[in-house]
Image 1 (cartoon, rainbow, N blue to C red):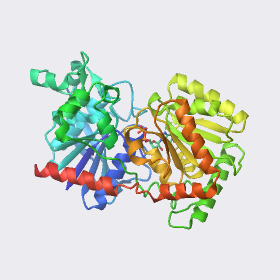
Image 2 (tube, rainbow, N blue to C red):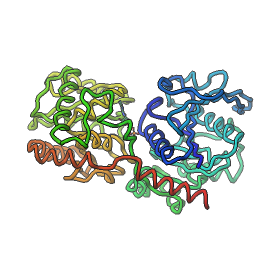
Image 3 (cartoon, rainbow, N blue to C red):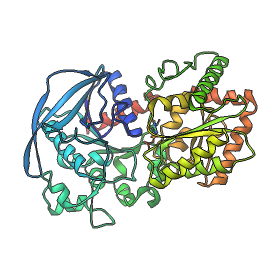
Image 4 (cartoon, rainbow, N blue to C red):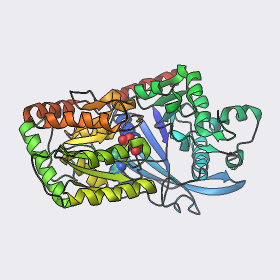
Length: 469
Ligand code: ADP
């Protein structure tokens, strides 16, 4: 089967969040099953192509943007056996001039979708075209093919105006007006068009798929989701277990594996914790549990719950490290202040950047991992934490509800309140103080199958159903 992903992110070369991990992990899984996968992405200025092998000739093609014909090129790279990455750009370097992946404009992704559609149509159509989130959701409406749209987050829907999509040659006409009209506004909604036009639509967990009928989660698209029930399903994300592998992870001070005796795992985690805290300039103590929080610092992730927990829990001796990126100005300021307070009392630190290596060291060196999200379509960090024997403390929502079992491989709270979060954290700390009980949690978390094996099979079934329909 030939599968083409058209997307805005790919791990690790152009990553902001989980979407990047999913495209990479799912593609590799399909290649392992013998399928032929291509990933099409813009050639942003920030793409890190080091470690990727250039292959083949440069493909030249043209596309019409804003009424003008533009010469474009596609550079090919090999990601691994069976997975090829195509980076698209205009000859004049439209996407290479973009420093960051996302901006405040929809133009960059409308242009990209047009260019990707033109590239695809100039060749033999693949069996499946898999698009992701609002940046590429317009494709099923402008390009022929068997489309799967995966929605990783309904918070962003690609709201825009007719003048925006007219630039990529979509002409205003009554049938399209209906498809693109935002249910609640006088604007267009690219995700809505994708939901209606794709032959299959998925989201990234079964609980989030159910939650989406509630306006709080569906963000205005709950009615449309109700209309497409027959082609809509939830598939929980896996993680790329070759990349997230404590046995081979090159970022770690000490490698370890589930196949080793548990005492070895515990000792390796202890050494990783010591090394990590030394690196961060915080003193190490065996008795104090270390909790970490790695996220985009946006309201969705519940960062203020972590902030307030760190400030208000006085009766438990613990340490906490926060690694946060893309913070809003208010959150940036609040967390800069928290860093000062944590460091002053030797209780932890806040690092405000995107840091791949530090994230790996935190997954391995921490005892607990916070995911107090207000909503969470799937969430990958709790799954990565489990693979590294770090116990997640999560809110019961979306994929967190599907992947963490309270009292077995993690701790779960329901109300999005500080008191509920504190209660589950206290329970975790009480278990931490009884090493044998804690080790049972570590063992249970590491035993979990967090790979792409099961979800890969579910996507394959979906692709096969679509092809044979
Ligand atoms: P989302 O896609 O909503 O951001 P996910 O939990 O699905 O959340 O995926 C987040 C991914 O991004 C994980 O691989 C996580 O380790 C990574 N990540 C998030 N913030 C940072 C950061 N500041 N530095 C390094 N990695 C980060």
